[in-house]
Length: 170
Image (cartoon, rainbow, N blue to C red; front, side, top):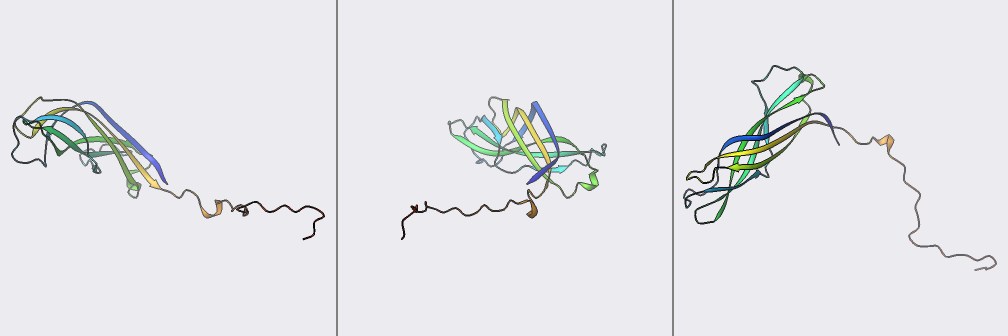
């Protein structure tokens, strides 16, 4: 069972981003309209931000959030593509940075589209997003050791036993 050692959260209520949509056919009827932006079913990638070494008791993570983008072309057909946005998350630590190398990270992103440019003739969109990233540093620990397991109860019969009446000799 993972034990949470440290956690951090970054919530950007209004983030202006320019997203380049990939994975679409080369020729689509123009104009293109952005319909939906949400987090893709792909794990986010992260790395420690090397440019922010100013704090000894915190880690700054640069998180890449994969996005699934839905577009409507000029003929009214829907197409799905992929993109990404980046966020920095500050995670305060209770241990020194050099002792936290053996722990694991769990990153939980959420993205919601607030507004977008109405139509464009390219596969690049200016969009306003609400983004939330939670980062947890976890360490796996055993739930219960062998010495604390309860003993098994005595066996119980699966069906009721026949009653014996006093005075009957069988």
